[in-house]
Image (cartoon, each protein chain N blue to C red):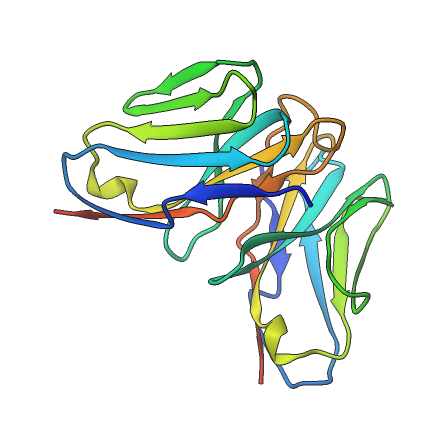
Length: 111
Length: 115
């Protein structure tokens, strides 16, 4: 079946270090979304990527969508303690209306 | 405007019982999706409703069912509860189902514990 794999599962970084999480789909995606879930909270929408090769930035966060529209990444520059949480990608396979969530990457930032 | 409201927030049930969870989407949103979140399996898609019709369904047994009312409020029901059904159940609303530029807004979830 259609799957969206996300790596790494966990990442501990020192405050100020960079962080990247990767998302890989078994099928071509129409678009991909990224969400952040703080500990004890619910997923909150961050961004959506639609075009092949698209790159979007939100302050210290950079999102990329692969040329083949099967993979994506989220890069955080100079992490802060407020970045702690689990980051999920959610891809919508072409021709479908449902989103498949990645397994998530739990980020811990050590002060 | 008010966010997505899920009730109850916490629930404890015994094996074999059934449970009904409720989700009120953001006003004007007509699509409601349900997810099961567990530490080991992440976010698993249960089903999606739009205009009172189930449009998509995940790979869950028939014990999991749902419905949507004319005011877009949705309920999900789990019958014959098993210990493995213990999870956080999240509801997400969006204006339209799964199209471009349609972000999902999640509720706080219902934490179900089956004992």
